[in-house]
Length: 289
Image (cartoon, rainbow, N blue to C red; front, top):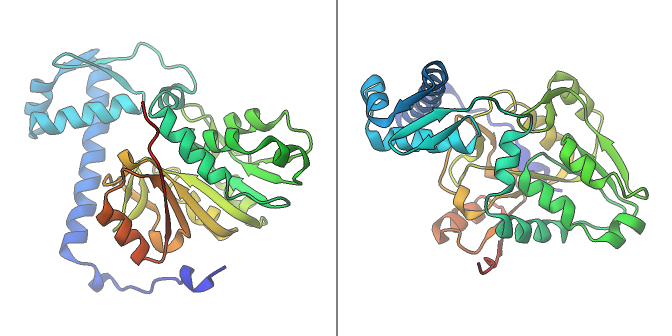
């Protein structure tokens, strides 16, 4: 454990640069625009890229990126020249869609993460599809005879592991997120205050060397400091397609991440900058199609 890695920053407001302010405002503006686009598509049933570009005063390229992101999140369906609203969205729609993306890479990363688990450990596996692949990759002998305790807030992961009776399974409850099949909330954060785990495993769909892991889910963002506080070691896992993307709120900067696992297609400059933060970076060979 390296307690010095988790020093609290006493940075003053005057230390914040103009570029950082601009980046924060830009990210916030993008998130707000996307939710406004979603509201318009849901209200009208559909919208064209051209009309949205005029309505929001941004380029059609930006609108296409917005629609692509909203489709990835399971909120709408892109069509030629625009987008359509979804008639209904079943619980777990977002995570179901994500399970079908980059499957082979996620499985390889999951195996690499599972390889770090040792007998007798207590580990916390966060929610997400890469985390699900990690849970699936834990060797059966370790689950049957390894004396593991696994903590998770993901009902999907809990369901995957529930058949292994010799593994102690602790499910963190709270407010259920239908779209992600996981829990959040103050009750969950309070429960974390009494826990101590050897390793915390987290995934992410947005990573930069400068900001670390970030998210657009403002309800989840505060949770990650509670997760980090109960862990001796933090292992973050994300495939290289997530590198270079930043969201509205930072969840974990690289100074709080001990090990980062990604695939071999990660940009060399990103790897160098992450390692300069003191983070171990493990590069996993990209599976062939």
